[in-house]
Image (tube, rainbow, N blue to C red; front, side):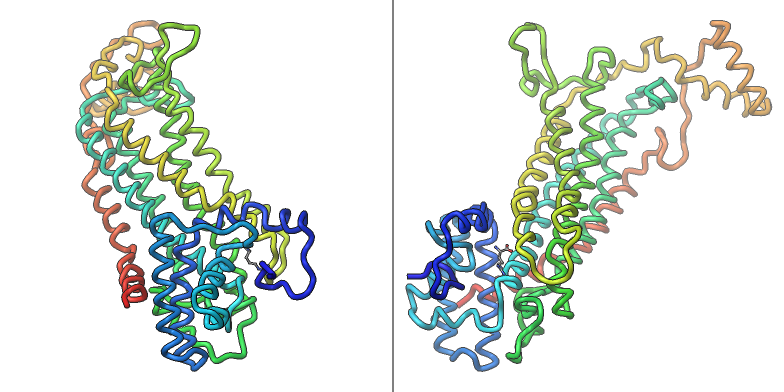
Length: 446
Ligand code: ARG
């Protein structure tokens, strides 16, 4: 029996098969539940345009719903010798229902099938990402509020600059996540369009009802132009990868700060012992390996959009097998991102901050601008005050007052965390996941 959907009377060379299938059988497991949902929508539409009878639709749908349960439980397998998830599902239907199973592929191609699978996968994983990001955001805001009065030096050029605080430090990363979430939302919107019906990339002579599959799968709209729908392969993944990379950039910066602040030379934060790792030779070591790996993992995630760019860079329009390779880098990226976010969340909720940092005389110079400003308020022109304080510092006669009075928006004394929280929640509320949940519920109910 031919094991390929497309095999006719020549059997493909074994090595060629191994080479072309590559890791696709493993990667397609990520897509299995979504492939089944896509097929449920497709066959419902096929029945509506007379390509399947009501009875055929009922029998096919019942089987697909059974297979969906298996996939949801993580028990779906792609058998030895079966090329991909699309072939496996069709094979299972044909085994169980005979010739009816062979009818489901009318009016589509694996090209639009994998496209729709990817879009459904992306929607669901972006939802998971937003949940993880929200948890981390809440922790950052909580810690910012808790430690809003703990002063630390701020740095420029890694030189002591001006007073900062743990309130500012935690809150800065919270606000960074707001913007990362906006980018993620743009990626979500671009992903939330239906490519099904573009078939191999040029549509079909069947009168497909694309409006119907768009609605059945809970998409915002379709990708109208069939050639553009196919062009979305690679482009969609790249845009989503850019959004993931944005979050990763925020967290790798945070991770570097955390490693640095945790060093004895700074001593700003301390990780609980159980969150540090030891050395095989130096008995005193308590290393921040978690943040070091966070940094490296985030850097790997930031490479993802470039990897996708390079795979797709010089391809003209139309489908090419090159696109298959994106899956290997792209599909596992969500698990990676979510595990990083969750780990950073745990670390930051347990971290101990040193409340006495600012009392250390080596940071005295961070108050230089405070002193200049005090003199300005007393009537000295800024440039003169600047010079007076500068000369006092040079002469070793600078002994500043450590009182601080920062009141403007976003400063030490006025963090505006409520506003930051409102921005985050406003962005979050513009994600619409309910529509697709409702659509799936309808497709899956008998
Ligand atoms: N595994 C393929 C991919 O991910 C599925 C599409 C196959 N299409 C084809 N024309 N060979 O791209």
